Length: 230
Image 1 (cartoon, rainbow, N blue to C red):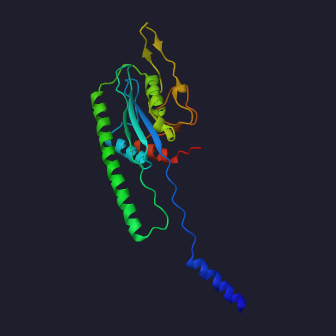
Image 2: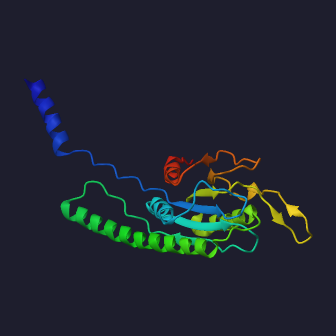
Image 3: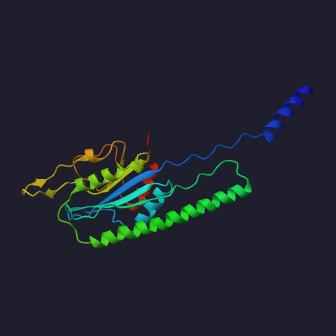
């Protein structure tokens, strides 16, 4: 009888004093650069459109990260990176009372609305750059694109982010130099250590170690979700 009493007392205490729920982990912010090849020699399976930029923006904004878009083409004929930083959404604390949950939901809605407006501006700016460069370029300066991505990733606010480089290019460096010779040397050492790469249409003999491969716009965001970082 006493044994049953103590068992009942133990379970009643467990019910009246439950363990606090663990807090949801803070998503690690990502920084991503998408480089798109507009040279005449590249036949892309992925043609960037507004929906691609919107989906990519939503994926990166979910962790309050940074996103950039740039072109690969003739030297000094492409624009600087189009870039956007997003606000970090709040994390759901554990064991919220009703009033606290309402405040959390209101805060989340405000941040999401703000980020959505930034995503739309980013998509519009990217589409404008594509319209400005509707004519294909004669040369393919992959290294210039990699250099711009390197500079982006090297900025202080990118230091504690997971870095993702998306290359929609065949990777074939081909630039006419001032002395009349052609530069075919691809400088993959411009990709910062620890950066995860995703390629589409890559044909260069030099491969990027561990790079993911996509064949459609829909596969791009899925590939990003599957990336693992140390």
